[in-house]
Structures are given as C-alpha cells and as structure tokens.
Amino acid sequence: MTNLCMYFQVHQPFRLKKYRVFDIGANSDYFDDKKNAEIMNKVARKCYIPTNSIMLELLNKHPEFKIAYSITGTALEQFEKYSPEVLESFQELVATGNVELLSETYYHSLAFLHDKDEFREQVDLHRKAIKRCFGVKPSVFRNTELVYNNELAHMTEKMGYKAILAEGADHVLGWRSPNYVYQPKTTRRMRLLLKNYKLSDDIAFRFSDKNWSGWPLTAEKFAKWIAPIQGETINLFMDYETFGEHQWADTGIFNFLRHLPKAVKEQGISFHTPSEISEAQPKEVLDVHNPVSWADVERDTSAWLGNKMQNAAAERLYSLKREVMRSRDEELVETWRKLTTSDHFYYMCTKWFADGDVHKYFNPYETPYDCFIAFMNILNDVVIRLRIDERRITTNAPQNSWINV
Image 1 (cartoon, rainbow, N blue to C red):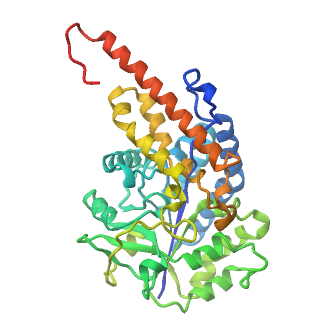
Image 2 (image 1 turned 180 degrees about the horizontal axis):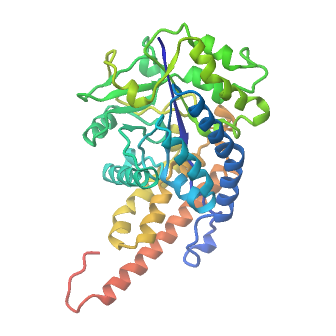
Image 3 (image 1 turned 90 degrees about the horizontal axis):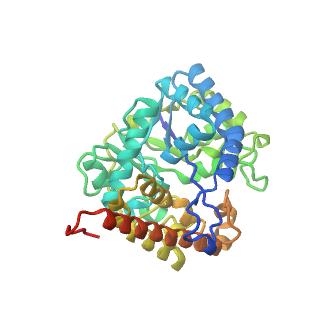
C-alpha cells in the first residue's frame, strides 16, 4: 500500500513600507501595517477560512485522513493581530489529533546560511510559539523554503528532531526516487523526506492551466495517477495558499480537495503524517553538500542570494546583529529579526524573465531595485538608532567605568 504525506506551508511576512532616504533618522516606522492587514484579510477570506473549514470536515468524516502544517511565527502574529478566527480554525484542526505541526525558524529566515546561533534562537522561538498556541512540541523540522544540506540535517538532529523535509531535486537524487525515506549523511537516526515536486506542482501550479495535458484534474484522476507508483511515500509539499489564492475557487480546487480522501482510499492509498512516515527504515544514505531549496527551476538559493543586491543586503543585515543584540532594546531586536524574513530578499530577485510571475506574489515593490533601496535605507536608520542607544549607555554609565561598545 502506498502512503500519501501532505504538508502545507503557512506563512505571511511583515511587509515593509517604501522607506525613503528622507525617512532615515526621522522615521523608524518600517512596516506597512495597512498592507499587511489587507493581505491577511484577503488571504483569510479566500484561503485560510474556507480551506480550514473543508479540512475540518474531511478530518471528521474520514478518520484515516491526516495532514501536516508548518506555520511561521510571523503568520501566527498576524493571525492574532488581524484575523484571530484564522488561528482558532487552525487550533480546531490540530485538536482533531490527525494534524501534525512542524518546526522551522520563527521569522521564516535564511539564518542557517548566515548565522548558526541566530538560526538556533529562531527555531527555539518558533517551538515556544507552537507550544503556546497549540500545546504541542514538533518532532519534525522543515527549514525556510526547504533549504537543506547535510550540515542542516546534522544540526537539527542534535537539536532533537527525528526527521527533516527537503526538495526532491533531480540533481540531488540522480536516478533515485523521491518516494522513499532516506537517511541524511552525517546523521545517526535522522530521516529525510523528499518532496515529489512533479505531483505537488500538478496541484500547486498546473491545476488551472487549460493548456496542460492533465487538465481538468479531478481527485479521482489524481488518485489513479499515484496508485501504481512504486515507493514508500508520495510527499506532496506545497504552499497552503494553493487553495483559494494561487488557485481560485472557480478553478474547482476546493472540490478537488473535498473528494481527495475518498478517491485516494478507493485506490488503496493511506494518509500518514511526516512523523509517521519517518518511522520507516531508510532506503539509503543521501549525501547533499550544497544547499537545495524548492524555489524556481534551479532548486538552489539563488532566488534569495543570487545577485549583488541580495548578497549586499544580507551581509549588511547580519553584520549588525551583534550590536543589535547588545543594545538590549527588545523592540529593535524584534525589528531586526523581522528583517531577516526571506521574503525581503525574494523581492530583490532579478530572475523574473526566467521564472515568470512567482516573484511578484504579493510583492509591494514595482522593481527589485525599489526593494533593495528601501531595505538598505531601513538598515541605515537602524544604525542611527544603535548609535543613539550607544551614546545613551555611555552617558548613563558610572564615571570611570569601561563600556565595551
């Protein structure tokens, strides 16, 4: 019997204002609360509320139906701030006992690539947020944008996780299939679950494409496609906004979802969570040196760190970490961490002509250069705030004392 493992990413960033050079030193209000509220309410109306309602119906109707989510800390904050009914609907899903929550970085950052200590801090913050909101402790990890390599697997195993998710990239797998459980090289007991990107993208990207040979895609048709596939598990990993936002309701995506559990069961396929799948013995050890991700055709990190603007912005941001943390200014620390969110660097991506409109999704900027300018202006204001705090500490220090600044 084939297993089906469905995981959904739930994320919303704190989008930035179009911060001008004239704002530096005069205005430290960086985040566009109006835009964030508008987008949250729109996605809640089109995706989160209706999809969660369907999921709850399916979980109650089909005891064998199981799913998993990774919900970022920034999404949880915005649920509480702008749309608390969304958080309540996720809590209802988790309460069924057939929904698994995964760990990741609280701020949906690429901290693993830049600062390992910051990475651990953000993972710990996310663990605490999931415990506070849902009362559970995740045992499976997924890194931001499925960025993965051997080092990450080794680190997260030491942090107590038993499994990790990654992209089933062709250049990593070679002749191998993504439909098996693997063991990451450099780990002892960790299990690696790989996304079947072809089948995942049939739902996430091709579902409404009338020029696609598989259109229209019904649950029955999809179940018949996957039934003969050899392997231990078919891992369908995708953004939750697939339902109702990327694929609008009039495409039939909700009807597809409603009929999927029944259609899958009729083909002898069972649903399992990532932690359940990870109990299987690994097919073999998989060696992944260079970071892979689930983004774009390259499946690497170039969507966030592929040009000079992105690298300059990331280098400058992380160079400020030590001073920011030493400031002990909780608001400034939180602001800095919100700036580590990967979306800000994604908006600076210049690969649009190669990869289509995906980089424009809820992008508040007209061009990548506008994002870079606003981001660097904000960092310049952060520097000014640090210097003010530094002078305040020096002024208030006891006479003849030594201040390490």
